[in-house]
Length: 173
Figure 1: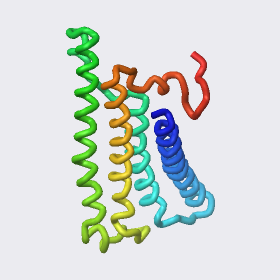
Figure 2: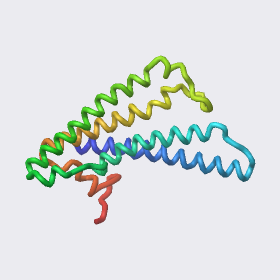
Figure 3: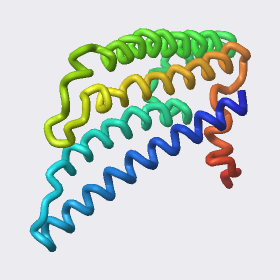
Figure 4: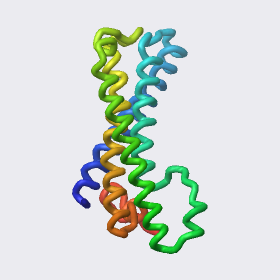
């Protein structure tokens, strides 16, 4: 499980860095070119939006990895340790089911004939390329939620390394 975690962490961090870094660089470049040289990159706004959408889906996966999604834990105060474990397993199972259902539909969306023939206005990319951020994000979230379910079912902390390590290094507390 540790090896899977390291691989997924690397993929998630790389995608997030590329998407956010690319969007930031492109937006800054566009502003500099527009105000200093009166030149506009006509496709920059569209590309920045698509990169930010990708970073949002990858950010959701990273948030799951750190177990920082918003949660309502009223029931956990009413039950004992076994009840908390059962609630953690149920919660992880719901996330897995959600990712399977919506992930399957996301992959179908990408392969729809309309997505294959429609192109974006400025970049002239096939629509499926832009829509790919949804199934990629949901697939990564599915893998993370499976890891969360496995750890919860075994009675382990869902993501202990989220607090103690990041990028393969120890975090000082």
